[in-house]
Image 1 (tube, rainbow, N blue to C red):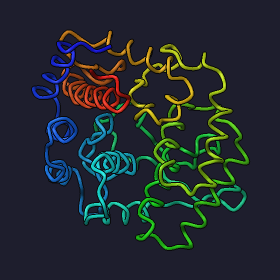
Image 2: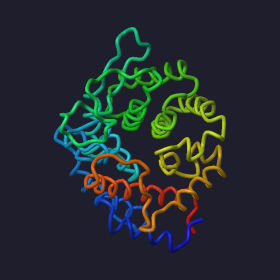
Image 3: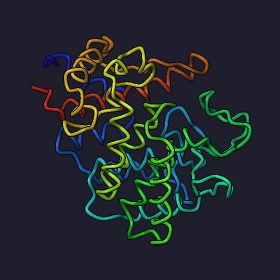
Length: 306
């Protein structure tokens, strides 16, 4: 599936072009690198309020904290499989709790999170984050990023008041009754549920799996045309991943397609673009380092690297 020379080209791209944070994570996964090195580099992205910013999410570049960037930080931290929360995690969870919002009482779900704050017009970010006014999401779009955030709160439940955890779990159950299958923003919402699943109670896991089964009942949904800008390595984590278990051959073929599309420089380049050419050169390099690492680590945990 993946020749030694292709792997070496991808590895060389990470070592020469990726951000230090992605290089450190690669070394942790493939070269017995230090988890502390990853955490030390991640500190540069964390603000005094506990949230993360500073373009940790390459498409949203303001230095101020956002829930979006903080969830990305938690994704990095989770790859390190920490045995207990450290100070960085404690501050991040505290930030997320402060950013919780409540729906009007007419809405059957209680809580939600905005992915990004309002930022000045001159702030550098992808156009889809140019938000002029904050408004609560529709029920169908509620999972992104709220479901992912709930996952981290469940993961570090010792840091969260039991009353909040109970209400958030009830919100998840209400959503699953209201939305028996995902029909809008299916892949983005799926990624949020994928990140929640390992931390959900067993009964809730079963309910989520039932919803995902209905959402992905057709294999035709999984093709590059439908995925659009979303890379397959963002939807699958390992052999036990929901989509890999459900459609192993389709996922293998999509991963092979992604390998075949690797640039001559070895990178898995984003298939979207924004900003002027000079800005995009920098943003694209950041994304390519991250996406290339993600592809290699998915191949590793799906036993697809020889």
